[in-house]
Image (cartoon, rainbow, N blue to C red):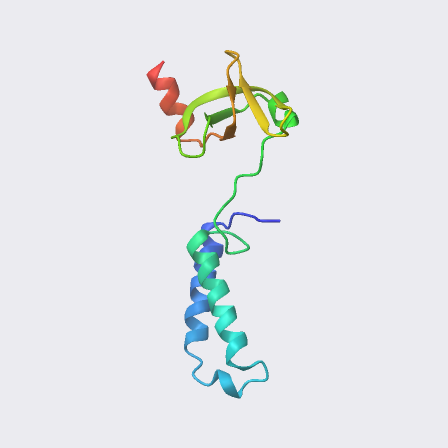
Length: 128
């Protein structure tokens, strides 16, 4: 399961990567050069993306259980549109195609939703 790394963990990845670069004789180890190149690449990816698996962060999908907590969410209809909101999540329901639909309290369906960041929520309150 992918997890976001804290700043201290990201810094530890960078330091470990730098320390491994100081080892100049990887081919004389039991693991060999290929192993250590992979380890360094993995540490580099973890530091770059700030995730435990080194892959770009993927927001976990929202569920109806999340909707019961009425979180602020950012929404959009297509992956190419900019995020808008934040809006209060009313409920999550599967449609006939098996896609997720996210309904805000105004009664508008959205196909994509993610939890709003702490910075996005106060920004919306200032606009209102």
